[in-house]
Length: 195
Image (cartoon, one colour):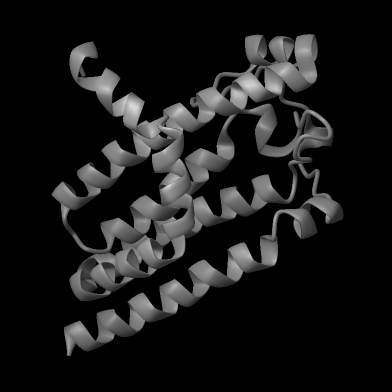
């Protein structure tokens, strides 16, 4: 995408006022998004979309149960493969649900919006992490790519690094329950649309 087109879009995604408004409206917007999905789900696309979404949900839960937010630099679990696995998991979760509509146009629009959200959010977070963890974080960044997994820091001992404090702090149980409720509603909608 040419710079003269993408720069204003990046500006929107970094506008503090818009981000604050979106944060305040995230629940009603999420409900509206679910309602749209419920009216558009295509029975033939439910299972493929569910598989992609569940894979993303599993990755996201693994991240949430591993990360020690702003206390210690997390370099174990999925973070030994890629610096931003939670955003990749969330992308798969959302993309899988959108895939259930069978609309590649809708999937493309959601993917484009998510791309700008993720890139800008990651930039802000990486500046924060560089300030918090200094050289340790810079060394980590030199070895682990932001979006494409690699094996440079792979250590089998750090693969399963679940942390009880992280599970509580990151509301892992809620983040498991909400998508499951959505999956059930989408399944019911699929059955009704197939009838």
